[in-house]
Length: 541
Ligand code: F6P
Image (cartoon, rainbow, N blue to C red; front, side):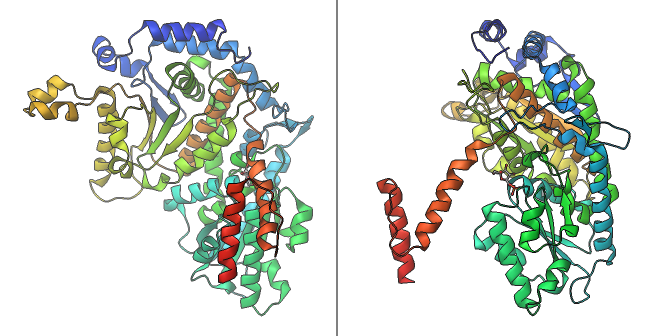
């Protein structure tokens, strides 16, 4: 079925929304079993959807929409390795990255599992050597600092996971991440690093990305300047993660020190491929395998659970409900976990680069809204920043609150304080405080409107036992598949990213103009003036 808002399944959802009141106070009062009925499990994740503006009628209609959009067949097509990335004619098989020996995933009729496992074995051997001090730098020093140079999918995933799995990291090796082409990033991240004990991981699927290659060249100069200029040092201090062996060799990295992956892994779906190498060095290969097992747990759930209980599918369908029927353009991800503080940034790329599309698979314009704006911040920090708007602003922002039953750090009751805040926020957002309740609490009449909370602001609460490697894998797979579901409903290609191209092309033209003496500027008057102002200042330096 095409994404056609005039189609009966969409009409039915819209009619149902118009004809029913979705009042959480009323619904919880009418049904003491509501929390039980709308709480689902997938692997170790417990997902409470009861504080959403839904009832059985909504879910039934959303599931029917999913069926009408052949959601289950599309899931099967992804796992089968069909070239569902149609604009690039590629399979989308990140699920093969967590395969175990004995599993089968085929691309063009060829099973890729042996290749996946052999890269994992090479990563294990390399990361063990670094961790154990067997991989030595040019001057015989063991590696103490690993600097990952990559951007987008070659940065956000491993950087997020490195923070998330702080508790599982080796204390002997510090991993740093450089992504921005702003020289400040590389300089700041290299501060205090000992060149004799520093290993660079150049992570780029294409090995052509401007930011990464610029930082990689600067890192090479930094190292060679400090190690006497002997180019043979590069072999001991630089490894690459890429699909482009030729460019890796041209850069000067021995292809023996390259960890490969494949064009059927999208950048934003790649941190469980060799792109996870800096993470594996930090947490060790066994913990990395535990993380892969977590991904696999949710893959199995997603592949085989009927839509009515399929948690990634339900989250995706709920997102469609809010985006297309209720009409909320953004959603927030609020991890009640400081270690997950980079999770919203990671999800921004995963979701917005995947589903920020305006044409369907056949190139025709989409007739409604697609990917939402994703944003968020770790709780409780967000509470003291933007929650005012979540509670009393004029925009409603559906939110996912993520928390853990057990802390990794034991500071007495402090974890209770954190979780109390999570529970309180989802309760306050859902039920608010009426003017009558505020008045009854003795608030003076002129302040009552200011201190009233409308409530009925929807949240999912996602609970997991503890932030372990496996649970992190489960959480990421949950969102990967949620994004897939939404792309399938909207009939868009979630796996290309042509929207990033235009800016890159213009930037490379402007780079030349910034370097030229008298460039013939032919942009609009605003861009010309900005470039001229910059060049004039540069001339005065
Ligand atoms: O931002 C565009 C993009 O192509 C992302 O999709 C990708 O994750 C990132 O650039 C980095 O690409 P590469 O790994 O090829 O350097």
